[in-house]
Image (cartoon, rainbow, N blue to C red; front, side, top):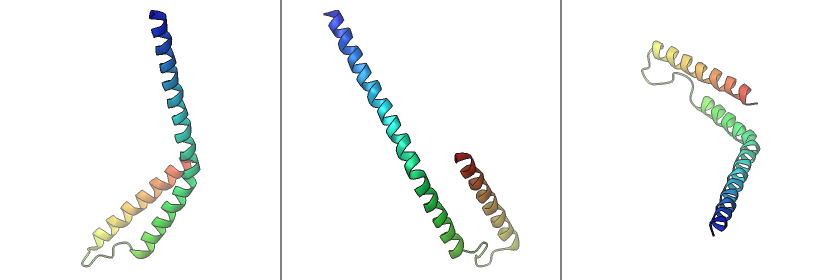
Length: 88
């Protein structure tokens, strides 16, 4: 009776392991399939935002604020560009 319990436990553990391994493979596959689509959507969204809102266009914004906004946006753009190169 003890051996039957051990066999049942091994079968159950094996099924869970196989199921989780299968789920990991599916998630990784879907990620690789959707990655180009997400990149295109991010690029289109960034382009739309850049066209609709020029840098520093705020009523009464100081020149220092405009320069700071430009510096931050440049840093974010460079960070995202470097991250995209590493992910390819």
